[in-house]
Length: 144
Image (cartoon, rainbow, N blue to C red; front, side, top):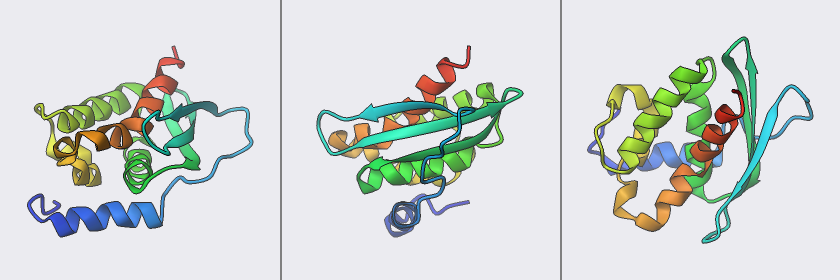
């Protein structure tokens, strides 16, 4: 369990995923669905790819121009949803969004994503912390 009260621990998680993003780099593969998300208020402009096989997320990739919060959040999101069904991924996404918007959420379900628990204190960073998650939502919707 992460130390939820230690801002240095939370900051180190964000910086690790920013400096060493997981699932970074797009692939040229038609079995992936893709979407682009960008922000009108900052530099964030990312492409996210999703590969699902037999109802399970097999891979998630992303690339683009993004700040530390956006990059780290999307990197952690990939860790959390790869290997999950659409329903499981949506449940994780719902809990993440609840955390961001100060609603009830399952701390254990979010693992390292808990590093963004104080994002609500900087409203201008909410878009950064959710841009990848909104791309995931859009891609999962297209699975229907």
